[in-house]
Image (cartoon, rainbow, N blue to C red):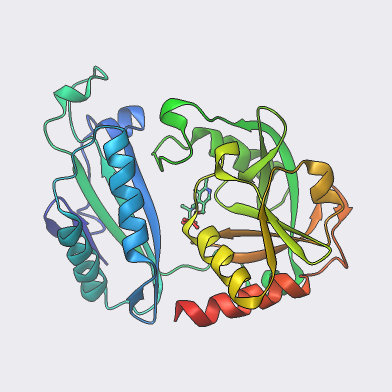
Length: 282
Ligand code: PDD
């Protein structure tokens, strides 16, 4: 396995970063998770735009142009001879001193890892996941603005820990006002009476690229879609619930906090969106 690390392709064993890297010391950095389907990078441009926007927002100077970055992604895939997989692209503030001042970090560090990926078994896409809502709130202000895909994932990790305790694969985060925001690493959708709903991102959700693709597919397939605030009550009484994300794709939810959703299996709209999604990614 070859990993891109600051201009060089190194093995997994050689791929080491400094203990003074502010990504490690402070979570000062940003990342993207991107899929490769049949040799093509899915929505490469959209992911790179989100990465460079995140960088601009936190005043992080990425030492490659967007074109050079795309070439690095392609070359890393080529060297790993991967047709289908997952790319993790990380840009950290780089090595500095122990103080948190980013001015002490002269050069951002760029890392590209590509791997095989299958987070859920195929059975889960048909039968749906069990999920819970958690007490962690999705923070909105400043650096934790969900539009910045930063390396500060501690809040999401607390959600994942709560999910692990409940023995479920993903969990639902609300925002401070109690509106449904998103999962620990996925966006959320519900379906009620044939209408598809997803929370507007200003409530505290990452503007997911899979989310945006599903919004487009709803239009293509003729489903009415509303970006509207909703509460846990709406989730409990929904006909269908599903999560979307680069790693998870489109995955149905069959139970939320002990309430069975719809028929207790993946619903028809979820399945038709998953089917169309899998067609368009290849
Ligand atoms: N997840 N919300 C959060 C908090 C996320 O971390 C992610 C991405 C999403 C979905 O966004 P997208 O569709 O652009 O992947 C929503 C991980 C890193 C992933 O799925 O790769």
